[in-house]
Image (spheres, one colour):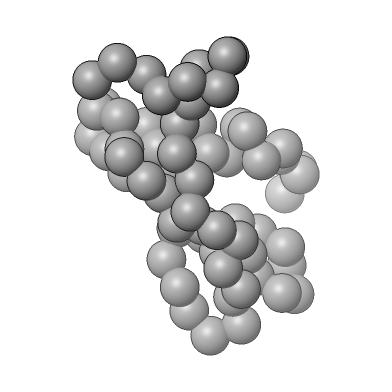
Length: 63
């Protein structure tokens, strides 16, 4: 599996998890062994944090 940057993963997760609408917040977890990023907690995963989509200027998009 090719490594992907965090921005690509965040875009993919927010698009699929929200069903086409913008997600208010997205909690992400990383597997300690594989370094893969997940949207759900599980044994062996550490929470990366809660992320919110912003535009290029760091502002929240209009709802």
